[in-house]
Image 1 (tube, rainbow, N blue to C red):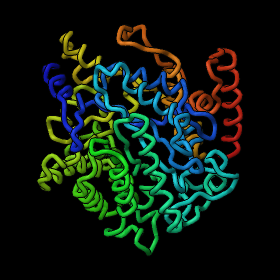
Image 2 (image 1 turned 135 degrees about the vertical axis):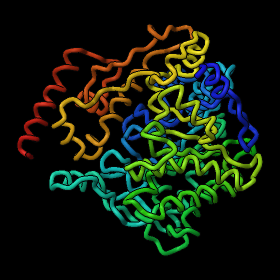
Image 3 (image 1 turned 120 degrees about the vertical axis):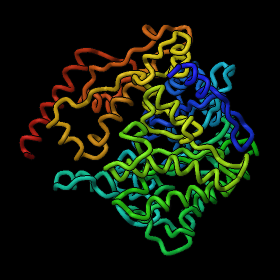
Image 4 (image 1 turned 90 degrees about the vertical axis):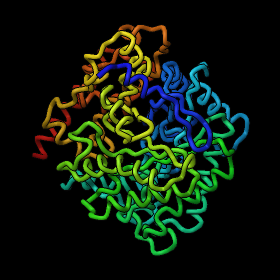
Length: 486
């Protein structure tokens, strides 16, 4: 297929219900940066450099990593957290971040702040609370371990406390915290916010029957499941302006746990209800992989099948509602690794916007790359991924052991990308750089090195001896433990 078709579709502007225009369909979606000070803090120089690099290459929209509305419910310890008040001094770091995300301003990129609350997934020691102080959640249900075994269970029990069920005052406080987060974004010059209602975080916990066993008006029953989310969205719209962008992130996989036969209809009902509020500008749909194996059909994976079917069905729901210009746009995220997949998602009406996560780390200049492929006539790269992904399958026995440890092995791939993001935050890119000379990823970094360098951050130091010796010691220790376990 002609690359010119790809560029014409992908770089077509589209208007949001609030009246703002996204200049092209490429969205750098939220990624956890792990760049703030330990136990949370405001944006810093690393964030400014990182987002300036993305802003230099004409993305249509750029979304921050999760900004925590509660400093006592962090995720992995280095989260951006909101200031206590909207003083000029406290807002200054957020104003700099918004300016960094816009770059020169010539491309019209939209800067979006993602607001989040980890709820029961906020872990011990690095969650911002006193040791062993439980987090808040809709119900007093601990995060379930992914695997069995006494070592895994012991570590899991240490990492995740049984949460305290939220009172009505706690719920009111959370509503106000999210609204305050939107005020921070609005006063700092962001174009909008995105509410993180996915990946098992607090807003998703209220929606899910698995984590919400309440019997009151905030239960997970169909008529109550979105009550908290609606209060927050309504409050944000009242506290900001008519053209302030409001987005919501949903995860199809959150609905597909345990092969719930009603999951498909429930997620569509929620999607329809949110659209009918006429308050939301875009809904991000994540939770699957657009590429595997056939986007239009069910697969052997219940989660993958739900994601594949839902992204198409959601578009049909929007059209059936006849909301006109009030209809939110769909932002599809997951596996969009080639020009062909980007093109197909738009022309097949599976989405309005294209969410690029890890691909934006591998190719921060992706918008420019797509334009160059068209001008160079490289149609042979139509189905080739933009960049190779890291091979983290080394030491399979070690990898089999590591995922039993929450917060350490469960995210080997995530750790690799966090290290890559950190490197990207120390190098200033510009459109004048050649692709060959601007930024090279370290594909030699293996699973142990990725985990080590994610957690042990020595700023601006990349010493070869230290880099080689310390991971070797960790590998030896873990190998000895695995010999004992097995």
